[in-house]
Image (cartoon, helix red, strand yellow):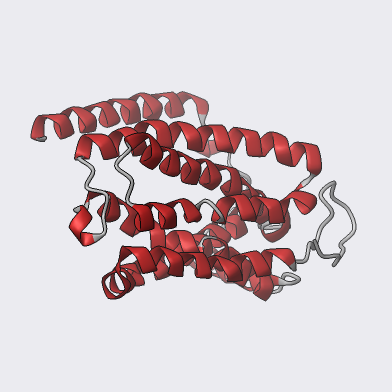
Amino acid sequence: VTKAWMFIMLIIATIMIVIGCYHIFILPNPKKATTDSPKSLKESLNELIEVFIDFFKKKHIIYYIFFIILYRFAEGFVIKIVPLFLKASRAKQGLGLSEQEIGLCYGTFGAAAFVIGSILAGYYIAWRGLKKSLFSLALVFNIPFVAYTLLAYYQPHSLLLIGGGIVLEYFGYGFGFVGLTLFMMQQVARGKHQMAHYAFASGLMNLGVLLPGMASGLFSDALGYKHFFFFVLICTIPALLITWFVPFTYPEEGGKETSKKV
């Protein structure tokens, strides 16, 4: 295990060094920065405050904040517990998988399913448009948690069935996550401070995963895996409801503001 982690970290370090060298030549020269950039700490703080205030002046921003936080709320519970569930013994309501089996399902097939789901979601949104697609994307993102509920109740011995459930969840994660990302780019971050506001929205999105993740262990220990994953399914309901009614401030092609709903 020690040697395996040494090789993994060495590979990651090599990749980062290569990318770093690439960025030295490809990124814009800082000497060519615009002349209106802040020149002092005070100007920088004033600009930061302005960016922060402008973010909360956006139309429907309170609704958008709750939408961003709730979209991945159920995932926040699952993400910390699933690895423990897969490794726990069957006497403890787990699936009793080995580390190799978990790595195969998660790191190989799960990762591939995530990439495929993300790519297909891009084509799907390009075909239908984000406004018409967002609720279906939220469904695909949240419904695959049913797989873990079934795995917890039936505890199958077949690695094919277990891996299929993991692949289904990762595919849904990749497919549905694209919708949230595009929504933050097109509806939340749009305006004068687009990059900063997108960073704010991303922070809120991570908060929506962090908060339930902090409490996931307490719920899992109290409920047991079988009831815990059923509880996670209940947690998907707020995300689906808020997605159904989420207002769009901007039309997808740009232009006049609109408050039409999905």
